[in-house]
Length: 155
Image 1 (tube, helix red, strand yellow):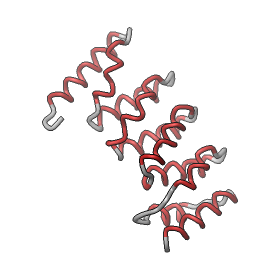
Image 2: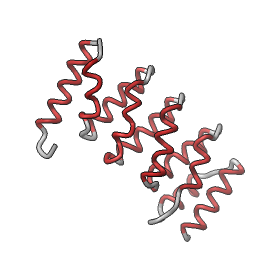
Image 3: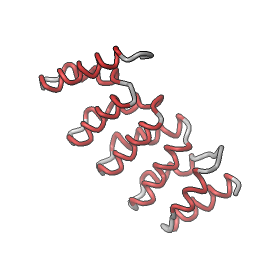
Image 4: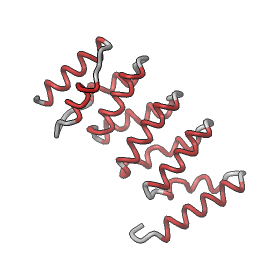
């Protein structure tokens, strides 16, 4: 299936609320595909459609497309969607620095997952702002992560 046709069919199904994982795979299996039309579905009230848009944009999007995910992460309140966005950036570690604002989350689980994400992708440098926290345990933990990152060959 041609990329344009896969996108057209998937978009049409999402608009009708009858989106399937088969249609998503048809888009994500394309070598080159413009996923910009999926950005509108990041605001969907249907979690399955929103999740599909995140996955498609995360796998096939350009840096410009990923900025839509960053915008969504800044205002998203659903923990599952935030975790999915974090997973996208774990797989695309070159772009992970864009998610530093998740370190300001009041949701402890999102906050901890963001710290873990930066650590796992070798970007402990993104955690530097937390060194100024009033939480002494957190500060010591972050310092340890940053030192581990410095001692890792190739960083």
